[in-house]
Image (tube, rainbow, N blue to C red; front, side, top):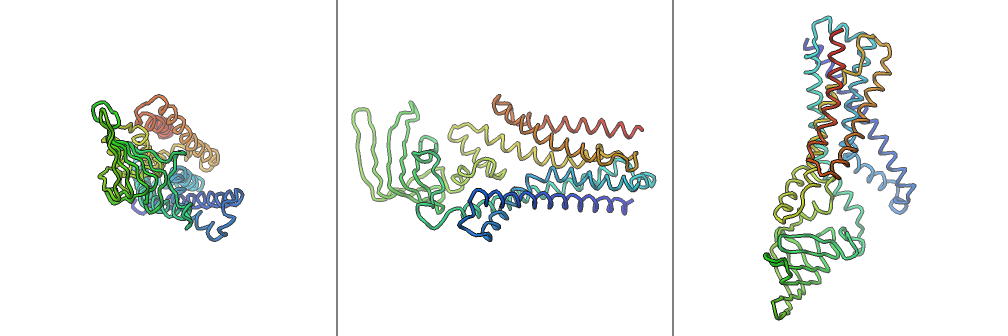
Length: 359
């Protein structure tokens, strides 16, 4: 029995990785073609364009693992069914539970791959890609300028505006508005030409400070000014990357920062649940693959079942995205629209599996 389990495990792993490599290669080629068509690679050469596309590979791997897991498992199981190997295995004493155990090991391996790619390789590749997009020209080193007036950030009882931010975290055009805790009125305005970030401290240069009292204002100038803040380089990187490009722990850190500042954390908690749902989806899509392969047919209509299973996987993806949009509008708790499509798919697969087993 151990030999049979090892054989099934090896066949499914090879099939899943082959499908994943095919999908990633296909989408990478489309990336290069789209970049050339848009003129993005006109001045950097084909080698640099190919390298930039290679840096996108981790993100493609992370996104395509669920579909590849289902499609690869279906192809491997369908091949066994077409050659009557599964019938022989069942006759040798292999139960559905034994098959589920093998599929669970494959699922755990793919989940581990998704964690490594999504939490380690993906962020590093994104940072390298961001650095490539910034040229040596000082005017092009700006990586944060969300609005015409710059980037706005809340830091507890402060509202901070940064006009320009370089990749080395050098700030310019800084405006800081400190608020009263009681009535939220402005009590101090700090404007500085430039500054640098070091951990939890900002060092401002040529700062102009205006203290506002009930009946007067006091202005002062300082050549250098140190300011303690919660906005460190890590938090700022998190803010600039967007919730979809952050790791789970970066999201947790930024959620804590937002809670300390009294800001809304819904978007970032939803992104956390999306990552959890991604792993659950990978795990379950491999387990439900046997529901879409008609072993009793001995090769008949195998292509139909593979097509049906793959279509259901794609449908699950679009259903999840649809529920995410509806849930975000209705402010549902993120776990509801993350788990509902998964549980629906599992219920359908369980029905097909139990029906076939009764036969």
